[in-house]
Amino acid sequence: MAMRRQNWRLTSQIPPLLLIEIFAIAEMDPELATGLLSEARLAITDSYRGPGGEALFGPAVEAPPGAGPADQLAAFLGRRV
Image (cartoon, rainbow, N blue to C red):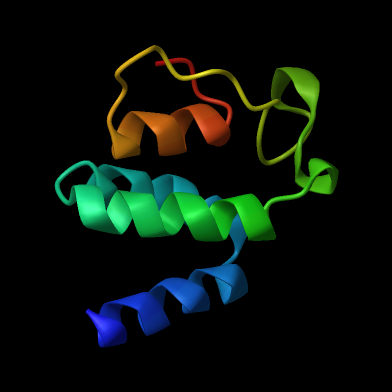
């Protein structure tokens, strides 16, 4: 667990676009998705966001009630879930 947490901290050094690709993997591992969401909240600022494809990410959207970690991550990254 400690090693895994240390790896999550590395996500802040990963280009934000790569986090989108990691999303597919995160769907298979809720613990990973939770860690990625935590790191994404630190690494992805408004400067990475814009409407209509003008930026790497759209505005964060609200995940539906009861959404799992992967859907919460997707919503934070601007994807409708």
